[in-house]
Image 1 (cartoon, rainbow, N blue to C red):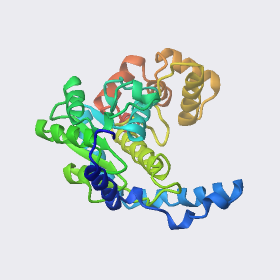
Image 2 (spheres, one colour; image 1 turned 135 degrees about the horizontal axis):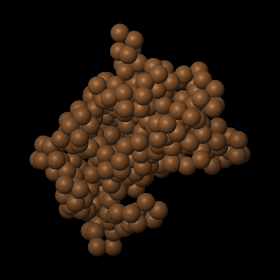
Image 3 (cartoon, helix red, strand yellow; image 1 turned 30 degrees about the vertical axis):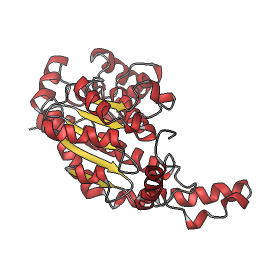
Length: 313
């Protein structure tokens, strides 16, 4: 800020008045006078407002999910982009998709201003770098078939807005996730998701309620999209990637829950199916061979419930 004029600084300070997440919370003015239990009670009271704020955005979240499902059907991608906490939330959701749903790492992508260094450390000026926002999308060759989700609690991060504008030029579907209405992210977005959580318990600390709201929204976008693409059976994540001991145990348990079979039956079916829980379940429920079960799943676009139902016709 040393190279910025006083007038510019004044304008920047005054502009914060229009950002909902920068307001001073009247319910926590005394938070510095309270004991530990009092402090965390105040924080918890504020946290309880988050789910209701997200709930008001469900229609827009549903619109975004439908576009993401369409992208997946076109072999395209869900791309998150953000700076600071917002960028980290996108990366967190993206990296969990592979073990949860057995999709490759290039199906759901998280990009953060400042690159990998910014995941753990602040990168000075990264969020203001409009050019880099565009370059980062060019670096992954974004196409009109992709869905870009720009994430910014304030709704006005230059890096994010520039990336969103470029994505629109390319023809991609652009979603905005913010916690402050009437800002650039919402104005640029094709689908604007704004969870108005109100001022933070600690003024301006958007890693708190705003970050929680973003995590809820991103988890919902990815999970609902995967479910709509056949990645679940009932409420079981049958496409789990059994890549370690814990996930292998979870896969066995999922097969047992889905088929009401015992451990040995589930374990044997998983071995036969090459650790593919969805395939193992179908083999147990229908008695089909591995090859026939694979064909049944393919014929039903990967939807296990449909494959089971159609096998009985």
